[in-house]
Length: 384
Image 1: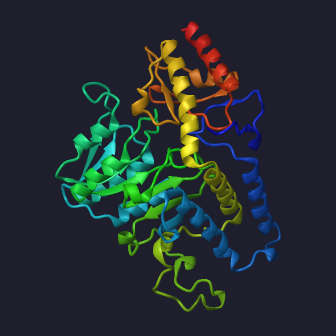
Image 2: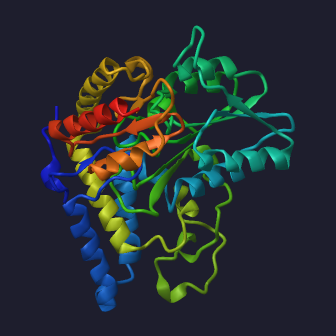
């Protein structure tokens, strides 16, 4: 169990920020790293040619370490949607082939597949939310049941963004491999807080935006690409991704070859030292804490939140079907209008997504924060 880490953040005592799934706060060390990076632009004569490559590679190495893979398999991308579009551009889909997605899945992991299906004559197969029956609450069982002979791509998260529903990716990945389907994962809402091992799950593509559970800045994330897809077509053709681009004196000796591994898929202008240094500082801290330790610590706290919520009449998904870092609270008659704003007025910050109040604390939250959440909820429920 990790001790409270609020001292690492600029978070006043009266703020109960329980909304990491929306956007994480930046640690003080991350802000310091970003400030150091900004200084290079203030005094550009201190930023040299090799620096264009050094900082992206440092970030790439840390990202690879987080998911247990080689840095050669990591591309630096600005967003989850960018990485998902790379996957959609490079995977095959036959006419009548199915792409499996979840009901109410985050839009960035829907739109590329809708366009792909439209262009290829494929079908988007949406797995219904398991709200009743034998598999109530069990997204894993629902996905396994939906996989069929026409399934060619599974585009999934590990955690449903609206309420934290859990998917067992190891089991799902095995079923996908058994029928020769490709697996594309958006782990924006779980990477850094739930253990994930590339060698265990073996997806074809996996992307995560860095501004949520990875504690990084906005507009920076990373994409894993399995070696079998690394000769594909990048989203853009920029100078840094070409072979020999480290030699600035020969940039106009135009090259057909690319940098090794997944680097051909890196975004343009990736060498922003402020972003890269900040994100690297954040990943270093996550690795120092240990993702297993983060998950266990938050899981214990959130199990207590879930139990307390049920005691006051709120519905919460069974713990075994809920990701450990999420608690989705459901009201009997629906979420009261304006609930999030009413809580924010008391400096308690959560999100409302669909029919759930999404409570997503992290290591900076205290018992007092949780008490304030329930005091506010008691007041709201008493007035409804």
